[in-house]
Image (cartoon, rainbow, N blue to C red):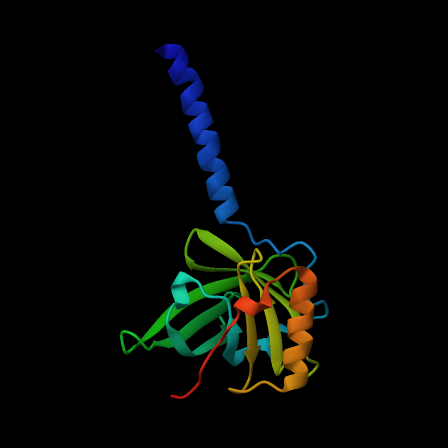
Length: 180
């Protein structure tokens, strides 16, 4: 029995450590590259979610916005808000984002539930910071954002083509309604 404990405890602690390490990762999907020469100050402000993959935190949500502002400590405050059209109520989540390396590379990690962090990678953005394509840590997470509730067809095509080249199944995108 003592031998079993000598093996089981370190193995369990090792597995637990790997789980915690992976949950704190700020990865980027293979083939995706974060925008360089990124201007974080120009990225701040309100963005409208135009499209996303379905996942539990935004299930049944329309009218989704993300508001980014600078915290006094240099991190970024993230406020996501959306309307749950099934429950007929507004929901909001507030979190924090930090740059993975330096502020000129659009690779961030975001947390709404510390100590769990996830990748937030701006992989395409227009020169005027009006439209953005954002990848999560894996091919399960993708967002198309706009400063307005609409997206020009040329930007839609540009982002869809880029996402497909990386390996995203863009047929699974949910196109978000903005009517409130």
